[in-house]
Amino acid sequence: MASTNGVIVRSARAEERAEIARLSQLCFGVRFAPADIEYSTEVFPTERALVAVDGDRIVGHANDRVMTVTVPGERTVRASGVTSVVVAPTHRRRGILRSIYTELHRRSESEGLPLTIFTASEGTIYGRFGYGPAIVSNEVSIRGRTAEFRSTTADPGGVRIADLDEAKTVLPEIYDRWRRLVPGAQIRPEARWQQRIFADGVQSEGGSPLFFLVHPDGYAIFRRAWNDAGKNIASIHELRAITPEAHIALWRVLLSLDLVDTVEAELTDHDPLPYLVTNPRLVKVTGRHDALWARVMDVPAALSARTYRRDLDVVLSVDDPFRDAGGAFALRVRDGIAECEPTDRTPDLELGIDVLGSLYFGAYRARTFAAANRIQAKDPATLRAFDEAFTSERDAELGWFF
Image (cartoon, rainbow, N blue to C red):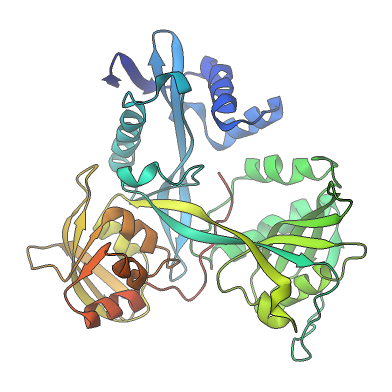
């Protein structure tokens, strides 16, 4: 496919799976069980993988799958979900990563995919290729059984403990209803359910099995374990609530678990949990990270795929230093529905394609990027309208990690 400094980037072969796994384990510092490799291959087939080869050795790798991702307005878009991007430590600074992404982007373009997404292990690498952080997640710690719910907080009930067999039947259906509402959530493959949840429904990681709480409109998956200080931790693996009632009902159970010193979870910026309890300080943020990165591959297609919170008529000048997806685009929104096309009109706003990716799901604000001089606006009113239009009614969340 491509050659850089004697290193060839080409499609991977089935017989190279073991070597690819070894390189990934080295670069990510993890260990894969045989079952992990098998399931991962089902989710990300080897025939879509790219490898960088120096002689007879694989020194770089990336793979992807075509995902269906929800965008603001309860619409969906097809996207390239990229995973397992690695370059051997012996082959840095040779342009290998650039060559791999060039091939990935060519394929996305040929398949007509308007968006590329991935979960990043580092935050300094991918901006040069036009990616920006697009979803935010907050790690929180709550002291067990000390959080009291306000007298005005409802007690909807309806939560039950589900065993593994019931979870296999119920959870995917609830998740699918949830992901249709939430920007950033993807359709989850069956193999991913088996690999990351149901196969882990037995004791592992030095703690309890995964436990399942089920509500008609939501579920929570958690594990209990003792830490080195002798404290019992309940770690929320995943909580999906379609309705506010399901959210409250699940948290009422989770915060009433016996013998639990701390509950650990991840929340979006506007999760109502701190405001449901009498002491919001008990919901302590211990970390904040980017949960998803995005790159717009086709500006008119991507911007026309989602809906908007207000009418808009602007011309965007989008800079794309890595490939030729940039240019000037007229974006017109009426009643939430957008039309977008190339134009030769004078731009009202200037921004990088990485910033556009950050704004896409509504998790980041245009006004913040403008304050950082990464969006240049003709006037404050235009910026204000643009900022409001790109917000989302529901917080963006990553559906499943890849």
